[in-house]
Amino acid sequence: MYYFGLYHWRSRLRKIALGFVAFLGVGVVRWKTSSRWVRALAVALALPALISSGRAGTKLLRPPPWALERYKYDALASELPLGGASAVLDVGCGTGRSLVGLAPSLSEEASVLGLDVFDSRVILGNAPLLARRNASEAGIDVTPLRGDAARLPLATGSQDVVTACRVLHDLPAEDHGRALREFRRVCAPDGTLGVLELPITPDGVEDDPETYWRDQVTEAGFSVETVKRVERKRGGEPYIVLVVTPSAR
Image (cartoon, rainbow, N blue to C red; front, side):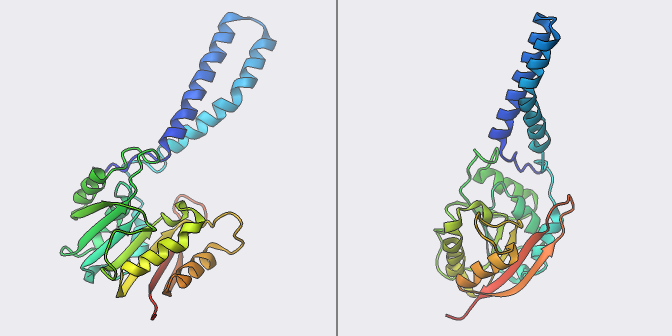
């Protein structure tokens, strides 16, 4: 049984708690007074907190902490030479969701690293131990590394395949180029980088997401092999998959 943690749990639980307090407040007012105007005013004042609480509650388990949308990782893995890779790095592995998603395509002999800042303030339970545990449940042995995507603690040219699943958009825009150049540095000369991204760009960028990320990887020293969209089963704009290889220096 996998557990991938609750996303943005602090802010969502805070909103749920405020909504609960607002609900109690309305109940106290209704108990203390029979004035319809006072009751209506209490409801009106509490309504924003109640709406916010309801929205936070519906999002708290989205995605469910035990569920895996395997199709998007399959879409990425189908474009990567994972079966023949002896050294694989997953950047931004978090609690191991992407590692589990890619596991069926990995060689049993592969040395797999999972790098993340492991910040439990964003994802409840985000820690190296949980990443290792989930990967083990999926049948792969992963070595978690605590580190920064823009300063990878790895040797140059040491990785056959580097993956980054839904992580680049979480970095500050000024770090996109630095992180991708680091991916280029650690990627073997005949290696491959696979990116799975949300269809979003930094504020102020007018290019569509495909163009933005294509330009970013090209400027970092990669040649683009594949760019495709992956339809999301729960609706919304499609995911973006990019597969790139180091260009000649």
